[in-house]
Image 1 (cartoon, rainbow, N blue to C red):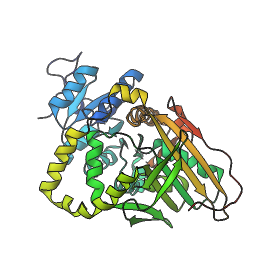
Image 2 (image 1 turned 60 degrees about the vertical axis):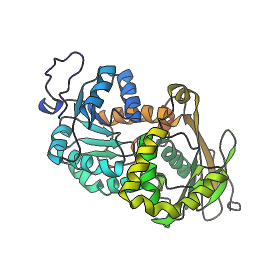
Image 3 (image 1 turned 120 degrees about the vertical axis):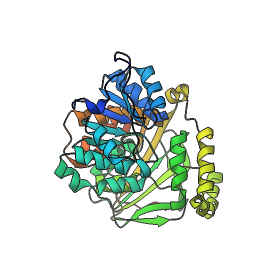
Length: 380
């Protein structure tokens, strides 16, 4: 059934959002998920007008009862209903994944309605799909801003800051310290396993084996072993910096590297519906996401390096909040800026929209990017 938009302060038979006239504010779709709840709480704290949305009325209503925010429920497999609901808002922030399934119908509805679109995806294919709608977005006067969370705000800003210090850079390396995923993130990672790894080579996205390369990364706190992974910056950093060769790394002990390389052989099994259903159910129980104490206590570390063909290079680091805590803060900050009307229409990235130092506007975040070093031998 469709959500009735019931919340404290409205009557039992409150009018659904879509039947009221358009008003300033945003729809947070996926508000009942782990990350969506965090975003809803930050939006309420900051006084940002947000209506909670999702697929299941009872689930969204429970969150709305806790936060006092209005709500609406609808499925994404009915284009007419999606278009009707989206048209009631100035912007939509999509927090429901896997985004390979949810992004396209919401983007389509936003373009038709003249509603700005944001999401918290980290999926390369989704970024590429959204960026492919750049011309459509400009014609519609709509901003499309994917990746407003830990994927990819801090790494995108770090990449842009590094590139600014070394004009003409031809290679970019980015790395982040892994953190405990929520069930939604784990499901997205599971869905992407059959695709293997990826890298940006001479401007093109190319497939590479899982854990294609392994190296030690000098994070700000201490060095850690890391392996190549398919990360959203392979799409976003390319557009933010124009650097044609990009590799992305995630911290990984030797056992995880070995498992990644061996596990790729089992990836074809994920094409079997029964196997995929069983594993998705399992990860939903195994990955509840970090609790409030962990989100307050943990820190996230990132590292980047840009290189030029003459051997000159710049290395930098970023330190910020735990990944989910950062996602909630950054997503609301991005949404507030888009609602403020300061972002030009088109498909864009966080650093292109708000500047390379935007990440530092999120409390507890520091970028350290020195000036370019003299030419020298590149790393292995």
